[in-house]
Length: 110
Length: 122
Image (cartoon, rainbow over all chains, first blue to last red; front, side, top):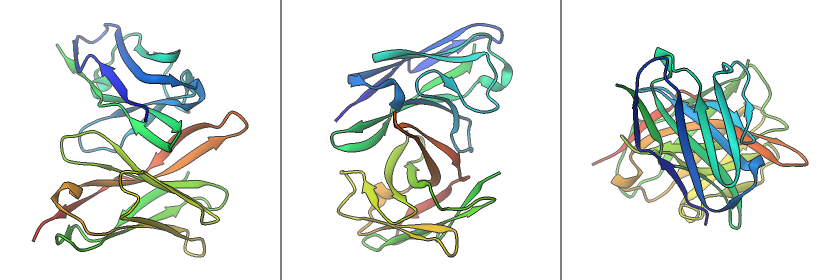
């Protein structure tokens, strides 16, 4: 079973700053199987990135994903007020076939 | 665009069966995979399982013995049953479409329903 670890747990930044969020897998993960979601309080998660680096429809280009193997990164180039939220990475593992989510990184206002 | 809406009881007694339905609107349930995901209050996300429109399923091994997901294409709905519930099953339950792009099998969950809180309590 692949376990995802996200760091830091909380990231305190100011609007306009750059946010770098890490997602590390316990075993190598295909880039095809890595996605990122944003969740605001009281809302469902929202897809940001799929296939490790492809932005979902309607997602601003300040959001970017990168990485391969066991290390993946979500970068928000310049934080907007609406970007303060919790971010989850998610992967699909085939042995056994299952989807798992990381514990999340909270980006809050400094 | 496609929208999903969960429905079902918000309160279930311990040892009973939790039953939820997800209604898909704005598009057909056919040719896609559909999934249930839950989130205990203040905690992270847990995938429960998915069903293909044809009826084939795959469940989280940690819940497999208690989970049944079914689909009704005539109603554009799919459903979740979770048996023998305990307080640990208290969570917001989300339904979502699982998108899979072959041959690389790139996959992601989108869109999601708004979620429904199910509390397990006597």
